[in-house]
Image 1 (cartoon, rainbow, N blue to C red):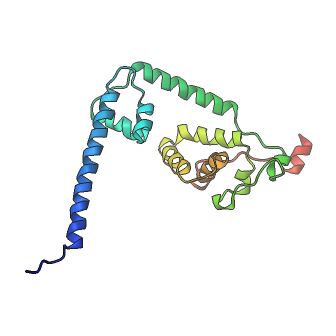
Image 2 (cartoon, rainbow, N blue to C red):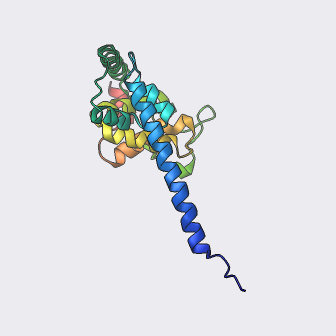
Length: 189
């Protein structure tokens, strides 16, 4: 009596099917929990998305598919927060940086070369880069969500994340950098 050795391909296929079925069941359970949470009064969709490790856009889509309307007070809070962000971005509109801020010095570390940030973008202060990036959020939300997700999950140092986002916006031609005065313009002003 000889027994054939087990077929490794068949065994791997069986494991894959079993694991895939478990993953589907887990995803369905998570979906059900998210939908239940969205139906609660005073539900915070952004918090729910963060806890589920899903994008807010996907959670909103799921809510629409299930016929769940956002709590009116949540809509009011998000509109108020968006208006505040727009006001902050407008008040922090990038101005031409002083010439001393352009070149990295002892107080300003140059961006890591692997980031691919142009000198013009690297010359922006942290606040200027943040204002440009946040302003782009409102005018190009789909691009912004995709870009922010890529930036925050790719190991980019936190102090250069807005600069990388601005560089991506400049490359995609959706962000225009502020004009920097030349030496002759500075003297005539």
